[in-house]
Image (cartoon, rainbow, N blue to C red; front, top):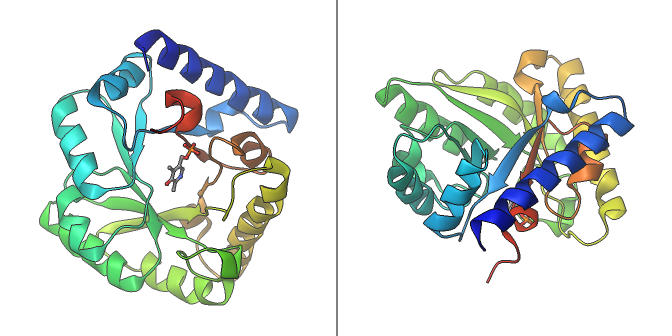
Length: 232
Ligand SMILES: *Cc1c(COP(=O)(O)O)cnc(C)c1O
């Protein structure tokens, strides 16, 4: 997709986020747009960055590392949004800015070890499966409290909130209950003793439903198609 189109799309998504926030009395500045650049070419990624995208989301560690290297010094924050395999953590440990998709202590421990070795701290989100049987990744509510407690104790990575991904993205209103459920899970975890500053972020909403997610309290939305067009 040509530069002009990507720049226009990005601006339009920002306007829609701002309008959704204002509908419910939120400050649009509370919502970070993560431009999901997985599978997009470097030309497309550069177009988005030049048009002001400061946060990029990728699913695969290797692809993210290659793009980060190609972009060089550009002022960009990198988000891992897809399922992260433990044996891939080392590929991204020295530059990733937020891992959205942590759902096991084993993965958390590996991140903490790799972050310590790189002399930094990696912020991350606990991925929750609020739609239960229908999605594969993420922890169910009964396990979330125990795991959040364990993850909050890791040395060199810092739990900063929750992420969810509904099973389908067709009718945005159908996904509203999942976003409400994530917000309620956050509140329950805080009630059960997880420090509120470890629950600051809610990563929810993609192209089809990001406005509903913003209405329900998202602080991070992950949007690909609405910025870069349909994937090939
Ligand atoms: C691909 C992807 C997105 C973006 O999806 P779009 O529908 O293109 O906006 C968001 N979150 C995750 C976890 C993804 O894998």
